[in-house]
Image 1 (tube, rainbow, N blue to C red):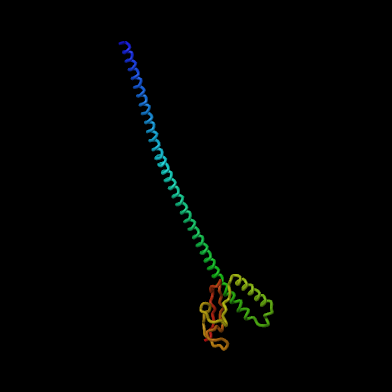
Image 2: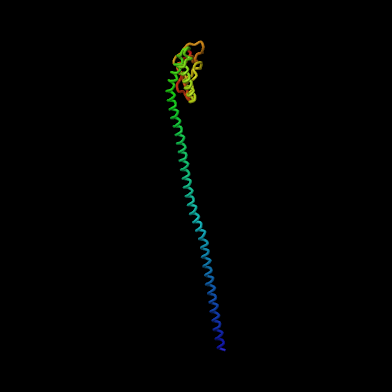
Length: 207
């Protein structure tokens, strides 16, 4: 009887130890699972933070690149505008230099034209049909045609109302043909070049 009780007690102790071992294993497994879960939770929490930090870094880099591109575009636009202004200014200066040179040449040619006209006016009626007079007349016409092609035109004078922009009154005169203030005589022909006066007409104006 005593031996049986002892066996039962030993059996109970073994069962108790087994249960305690099981309980400990379950506890350890639960603790391990909790640790894994906590670690996953921490990793899950840290991953969005890392992604957010990385994204912020990329956005900052893209903003810097965008700002650099805008700066370069603005610099190119300014340089293009400066070059366009330089080109326009150069064209204006070139045109002004051409106009100045053309006016200078025309001013030097006009006295030659005056001498041609004086020479033709001095030819007598008998000599007008001669070869010399005919040659002078042809050269004069050719000269005037070329001047007209260059947009050089004589200023209308006789019979026109005196205009100080085109006429230079050097004397007053009496006239039964024209009214007061009208040009009665042209002493020297005036010319315009592209609608600007190269030389004013020297005229006599009716009182």
